[in-house]
Image (cartoon, rainbow over all chains, first blue to last red; front, side, top):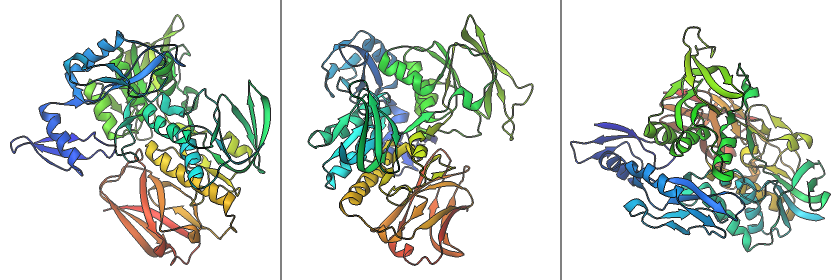
Length: 114
Length: 418
């Protein structure tokens, strides 16, 4: 039995994941919590948010995120990939910055119009 | 210039208030914002976790702001950026200044105060030691890093475990800094549990509860070492427990203060516990037609709740202009055992449609417990909670039918551990 705090929403449910019983999750108050509990043991993932260099905008950095959660072990590889990017204004919300970043299947997209 | 409504501040609170006032039928609305663009602090909060309640999806700060800014596009709401409000008067004159038109006096029929809050600084908590470069509030470091493009340090200690501090611990780590520790004077964290997990535990950053910074040393004008000591139950440092950290940066996440200079200047009645205006059920302050919402009233954990509260304020401002009412007698909400404050503080029961939402914070950590609402000795209703901490804002709904039965002048809300 593993104890976890769910990070899907700010509620912070205290989950129990039974590894010997098909990763049965208890203590969750929604279905997404059950999914999180199982994934967190088998393949923990996170959405990465960061910034990339920006030219011609109001600010020198443009905020970006991965459009889905990526394996935790890949976070620093993606950070490195972002260092190589420079965007030029205008940038729109949702604009793809890097496709299939580091082979994760996730795209890096802009989160602000600049 | 005469406007139906002037909204002071174009952050999440101001945006939601202006939108909802427009939806309720007001057309002459002006938002005054001191920064170069709308969105307020959301622009620097590039992490995700916003909007789960409001939009049922996980957005970053800029994306959340974008949704509200887009809503304004098809409206007649006007926006004045790069403009500072200097004074709001009792008669709803709004004195503003900018580099384009200089000093202007604008007149409004209603005003929404949505100035947000600012960070407590080193001075506010009196940390001893040298005064070198390298001591930042977590929010200023966040703006430097995420918007202006400056890395503020390489070896970092964070004082305070509020959400901004935790978010910055992760952010600095991802950007290549070594975050040595997060230090919290209280025996519990001031931030959300999920942030302890995904910002500290994910990156093996230790959290020292019941500890504080007791000395800052410098070399050539830059921070070089800090001393951290354990504190007792009295929150005073215990001699002999000192730890040295070799770091160049100290980030402070030691609380937020609602930014109420304008509110005080207008002569509005204040609540000493929230450091914000005392408000009625519709977010109206002690000056009829002047409303307040968001972090300027009380510091929220979630922007979703800021939007919710501010929509209420915006709608009420529209109602004030379009359908003026007589002021009814108000019930007071009193803080009983375990409650540090409530918002609203006063309730005009006839103005409640179905139910009254009350936000509050508890004074200490409670396990399984019961929140009771009493009219004198009479229990009106009660609510069960599994767990409550001061860092997590609570919300209860009191149905109008129960409020109608109240005979006293005040309701007392209190907590009892089961």
